[in-house]
Amino acid sequence: METESIEKLISPNTNFQVTKKYFMNKGLSESGIQPENESSNEQNSDEDHDIIRLVLNESVNAYRLLIDKYQVPVYNLFIRMLHNREDAEELTQDVFVKVYEALPGFRFEYRFFSWLYRIALNTALSHMKRQRSFVGIEHLANLSAENNERDAYNDIHLKMAVEQLKVRSRAVIIMKYYQQLSYREVAFALDIPETKVRSRLYDARLQLKEILEKTGYF
Amino acid sequence: MWLNKRKFKRLAKARITGSIAPGEEAVLDKLLEESETERREFQRIQELEKQLNSIRITDESIDVTEKVMQTIKSKTNTAKSFSPNTFSVENLFPTFPVRFAMILLAGIFIGSALTWVFIPGKSGGNTESLAGSLSANPNQSISYSTPNSNIRMIPYQIENMHYLNFIVETGSELQFKISYNDSEMVIANASYLAAEGNKSTSYDTGNVSFSATGRTTFQIIFEKVSDPKTALTVTALQNQSVIISKQLFFE
Image (cartoon, rainbow over all chains, first blue to last red; front, side, top):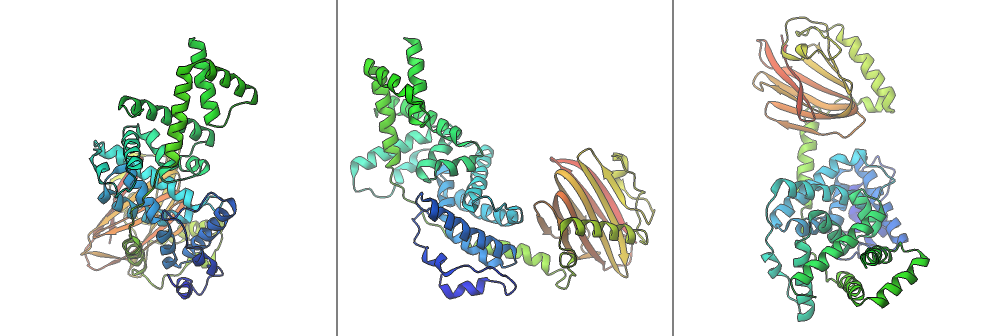
């Protein structure tokens, strides 16, 4: 998005300005997540808050900045939890509409990203409860082409084992290792203390170890 | 032996989750040294941790921006197109408590001069009066109270426009649905005048729905397009149970 188009997103009545550096910081990782760096997380959070204020100040178009920034990680969270691209796309749209409608209630002491994740994860878990369908692991055969065979082998086995975890354990593993959230962000998304996140992750790892031992991997 | 195994599990978990006390590190190291089984188990957990940390993440791309914005705009435009020149209460009374109080007073004042037809209001959770059709009894609003919610529906008429104000205070979310015959009435406006909690409105042919959390004032303005008496139905749900089902008549 061109820098000049920022002005088009700002209502004439607003006092807030989305800074030019927001667009210069667009060099985020593929998943849209900044490395775990306190100052860059703070800056990121401030920018999101600025956009939210714009949206609440009737610059509806500014909301697309948040969608652009976070739709990829949200979509991939749904794919990893649900293993259905159609459902994942539909839920991604639903979540962003839901989040927009909930923006008037957003509390600025939260990070938007963490709050978004919480809503997305709850949506995924509700959807899974409603569907109660067996998720086959055959989709894992459609991984993108891997050059390193050993890594591909390890990754596939690990992913197959993750699939067999219970939902609660699978959620923490996916959020920590696939979505690459910090302990703190996982804690917020799940609405549990950080110590409990570490404990659940440990228990999930033990379960993974048992599954991998049974499949002869270890 | 069993106690050692249990101790090992506790200490191994503490070390990996980063909560091990300094004095316990040496105890764990000793257990690992003494037992090959425990050492192998611990190594596997560490190896697994290493593999999880080195998973190669390949995210799939998606672009739902336009679809989402279209959905949002269609919801917003549906509300705005009813009355682009609606007077904004928020501009006059910027703080929520003042706004809420002013709207409540205005509703009570105007409600006393209405020409509405409905059943006399009974407060205190009398469910009989909150179901069925309204008998002709103008100049009264409908009140409904539970330990958790207070709902007032205040109808009134100004010239050829019929107003229905909902003034709600609730501890848990209420869903309202208003159904009407769209060949007899049209909605001129339906909007939140004040809302403490989340806002959610939806429109369909002959239906308008909204949610209320905390203190909420919602107003619907109808314009009658036919002469005979016409009816609308108000339904309120809380925790998926119907608590109000009322038919109101416009003269």
